[in-house]
Image (tube, one colour):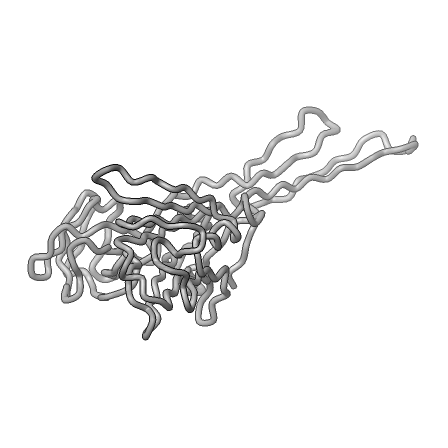
Length: 282
């Protein structure tokens, strides 16, 4: 089950000893918290404190709409920027390519597609084998028409791993300006833009209809003024621990994912990007 968890787990026991002459000292063995750093007591009367020490690999990934799932045609090593897949039909230049197995997750942006050969940036940061890996090509830009058919973007951790999602971010780029009542630069949404987490029956985090909704849900909004020959910019950053008191945990073994559902026509906006940031749980 997807859940919000405290980023730092601190277990502290405090004993107040008042007028107990028969008690001169005691021993307390602190709990064994997996992945925790033990802070030793400074004297014989102190207590151990276990502080969760997150040392898992950090990541920042686009949430994408799947267009093609395929497989590697051979094994590939760290530093590779071109792979051959069994089917590249819907793998398009400018879209994202995700390569993953049960332990690791890589994402790049496609630079070239030549037959079933796909070149991307950056290079692979881990090895991937033909037998154990999967490839997913997808759109990261959310400027799609979801008015007649919901456009779903999603991403989740490898099967044997769990992710702590600390924050999410959105970025709008367009030729038109906006205000609190619009969604990006277009008019207020009719059906709403939602973010949810879970597996088969995801739990909704929030539903937004206009730019003001981002701040209501805890987002920090920054507006970028248009240069004479540039474009308007608008970004949203939401830190889960700061605004909700906990980070968002996704379990790979439960096939948990984060979902973005667009139910309106967003094609008038030039670019809408949505990223998740966090780390692998250790």
